[in-house]
Amino acid sequence: MRLLWSALLAVGLAGQTAVGQPANGGAQCSEALQSLNNQWGAIAYPDPSKPAQSHVVGKDGHENTGGEVLFMKSQIRLANVDCNEGRIDDALAHVDNVRRLLNH
Image 1 (cartoon, rainbow, N blue to C red):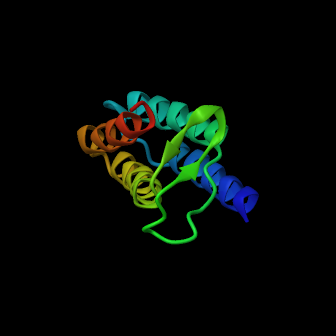
Image 2 (cartoon, rainbow, N blue to C red; image 1 turned 90 degrees about the horizontal axis):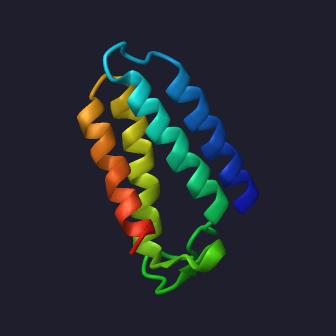
């Protein structure tokens, strides 16, 4: 299941960032999303068994709550949508939200 989610996330991020990018700021948005996708894939968080799960452990010592993992997945999805629709600042804010949780 974890491999399936990782593959779907990677395909979704790669496919969405390549299509419909606005000329102004699109490259910055695409690069930020690709970098985040690479980091997210390397951490390989499993899906939490429930949102209130207190510990979800990824690779390299990354640990967050189930709610935080679900929030980060949501932020990645929203960043893709915003980037594709030309809302670069909003997309980059979502990327920053995920990075803050990954680096705490």
